[in-house]
Length: 252
Image (cartoon, rainbow, N blue to C red; front, side, top):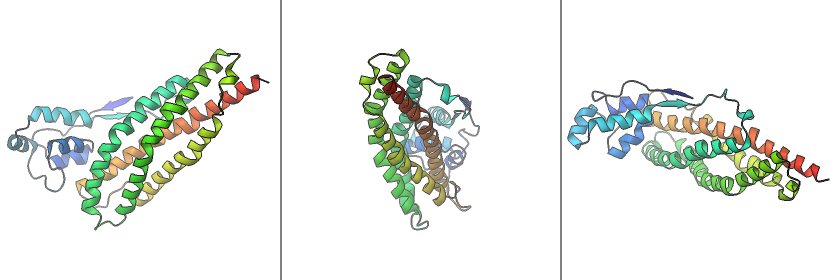
């Protein structure tokens, strides 16, 4: 894991400059009611004095969310055991979606409302995001309450070579294939459309800070979902189906 802190966050800086360089700071500014787009005309120190906000507290929060944390794609995902893979998906990717999708929805909604007349294609982006938002939380719940516990059960039976293992199998193949061919395919289709509509998340030259922020948020979501779907579609689910098949064969 690489953690990198970026400079430029100080009392002399302007909110819009900080958000341009560290888009995650927009959420902090929103919580404090600090304008970070075209209306950001004063440095943070002056704003904090006028709003009676502790400057150092604000700077600490801004620096905290501005840390650039990246997980290398060179990690040996296929070598992780099944329990660890599931724990990673739940604690990293599911936790990310549960925390950040609602925040992202609020920030994007504001941007869409203010800019849709100038950029008509934002209507389709908003519709796609809302579709993704509505489907994501039931999807996470189904995985955590049904699919993942079953995969853990199959994995432990397969690992310990239990004689009764075949009796545990409830034909995982069908629900997994439905996830991969239905819900996951739908997520991938939405991401592909996001990329096309935003020119790979590249704002136009005249874009304001909010425009750049919106595309940065969508790019971050894209990056997370790409790894999330890879771990499930290419690593976890095929392994579970293979274990299920092997366990069934040992019963004959």
